[in-house]
Amino acid sequence: MDAGLSRGLVGVSGSTLVVNLAPSRAAVRDGMATLTPLVGHVISELSGLD
Image 1 (cartoon, one colour):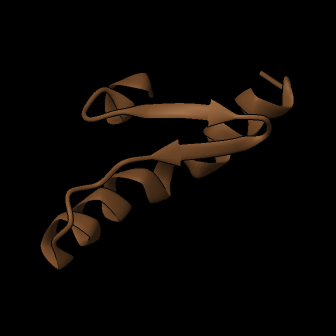
Image 2: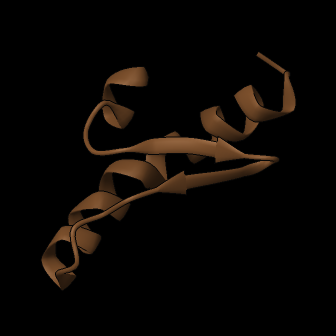
């Protein structure tokens, strides 16, 4: 699962996941396509459920 978050910069501020994406529509679309399947796992990790 962590491989999907290995590009660019990703961090946590409090309980907020911060992800930088390149400033183009195509990059945002591709980034969101990568992040969407991981959201449940990330929320579990941030909540301490995993």
